Amino acid sequence: MQDIIKAIEEASIKIKDLIETGDTGKSEQENSTGDTQLKLDIASDVIIENIFKQIPSIKAIVSEEQEEIVDLNEDGEYLIAYDPLDGSSLVDVNLSVGSIYGIYKNEFNAQNIVASIYVVFGPRVEMVVATDDVKMYRLLKGKFEFIQNIVLNEKGKLNAPGSTQNCWAPYHKQMIDDIFQDGYRLRYSGGMVPDLHQILLKGGGLFSYPGTTDRPKGKLRQLFEVFPFAYTYEKANGGAVDGFKRALEVETTHIHDTTPCFFGSKTEINRVLEVYKNNG
Ligand SMILES: O=P(O)(O)OC[C@H]1O[C@](O)(COP(=O)(O)O)[C@@H](O)[C@@H]1O
Ligand SMILES: [Mg+2]
Ligand SMILES: [Mg+2]
Image (cartoon, rainbow, N blue to C red):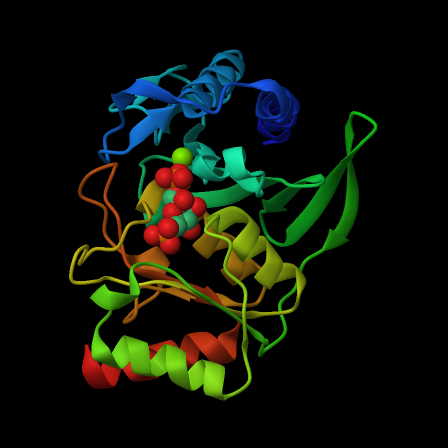
């Protein structure tokens, strides 16, 4: 696993340079989810793939930006699903973005996730590695240095409600309104990585990206976005659900499947389960 962490550090230093100097324009291509890819999405993907290709412990990789799984080493132990540049459309307005890596064994599905890593590119570059616990590192003078362990409080103060509001179910809208009535503060940038990083570092709260009338299965992708963060939140003493069950019990039928998702500290996650059980 250390070789994979080193590879992600190396890729992140290159992606940081790309974000600073690269072209923020659109490419001519769409990815499997139907998003028009930015040149930055494609270039970050190439950086990561070229570095992962040199790591013998990686059996196969699959990127949010590519249609198919890429086999690397027959004898490799790990499978990696990654989102090379999450929130890439925020680079041109200079908001924070990130990369997300889910590390799996045997098969790409929730039951087989064994570690998760994400990198935030903001005013600083930070990497969060979740194995048995959750550790944060910061890029300082060209090297990632350990900063702290991350543990969520039982209850937080932040609310990050995603997706198109006029497509919300009435009970979802009511739940979000009630959470604000209880004094939670709005924190939503539109970048999953910085939004979830903020909740982790400020002690807790709720991030939601529900199923909606326009997208009943939500927007966020299981293998590349939801399972890696679900793993991190659970290891940080919080939780992640699809409304009814643990996100890490959601079944994957296709590598680009999406799912509704909620991440947070335990109190907020129990609140979501209660509301959805009574209404969903
Ligand atoms: O604008 P919306 O619908 O709230 O969606 C925001 C979500 O979409 C994303 O940008 C999706 O990721 P990509 O940029 O990799 O497609 C997340 O980072 C974010 O949480
Ligand atoms: Mg993404
Ligand atoms: Mg992406």
